[in-house]
Length: 482
Image (cartoon, rainbow, N blue to C red; front, top):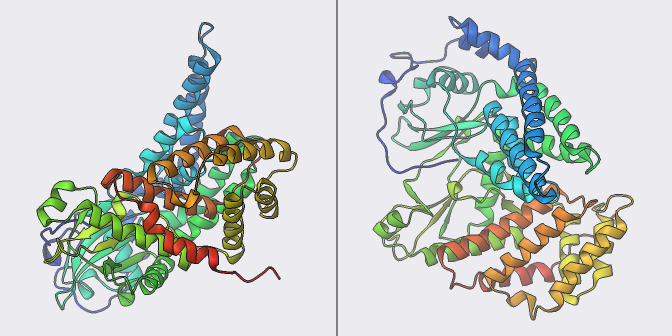
């Protein structure tokens, strides 16, 4: 959930869409009816979206644009590699633009694709990564309607103040600051009203899009099923609240980690209310300097927290981009900064079988045992039928590269990132690799920590910070199959 520095809060009585002077529960019309009253154009668009008409026209325009771009990229004097690069980059730009315009599940699909290093060409990654940018917020009247429908009654029944301007807007929700009657400051994450109604149509179109773009290159049904499950989980804010509470409990022994407390009475399936904390983004060097906080100190806290989540707990915050990590603005921050984790919609609890296979894969890498590594991939269904020879050759090249690495657990951050880039290249070049999405999230989360280390303090040995939890993970044993 995005958080921002201190801002002014407007009283409910003066905010757009507020219910001045109303107290106590009152019957409310259905959400769709309230949004549509006096706005027939919006009502028609709402229904067209729920039926898949809006998405169909947008994807038809995309198909025509891709066909035109495909022809434009071809020129008889261009080299084959240049033609391919232009086609892939042009297609990625058009696809990302369309997904961004459609928002909701379509933006989430683009973000999901950025994790799929085994399926998405490297040239397409930067365009899809832009889908993390802020999106235009929805009108406050729509936000108020969702909150009132979810919590019951009027806004004034629950909040003394509710800022009409959001502090953050993303693909499925936007966040507003508010204040309770007792003075407690909170952040309220509100899901966009049309998401649930259009989800079935969105997923139907995205399944067609996956089949069209995937062709025979990958198992589109398997990949789509993983995405649909992830999307359904993210749309239920009760699950996000549960993940936040569980991660907070796991990190309770880390005094420099802060997870905002969830307010259950003001939360539900589409609304999530948590404690507000004034803070500074971890990438704001000027803000950190004002607090007297050294980037190295922040990095130490983040690396240890993620290593514990990933290696020890098996439950981790899987959306580790700068918009979700902050330093709390408080007295004493210079001597002992606290890092605030927000937005737990994309959290993962690894299946014991997957944890066991990850451990076995690490042992195989340490022992340079290529056959054991391939056997683990086969057990997890990571090799498509008929692709065994190609995958074995790619894994063999990766092991040849590792043969020159002394003491893999002692690698520096730059070396880890270099190996990660080589692994990405191998995945892009090899057909038939079918990696579970949770495994890719696991790898992306830790690679982000190492990348953050290079950004905040390249001299700090991030691997050394992660080593104790990693060794603890290697020494653990998961329950065996059956």
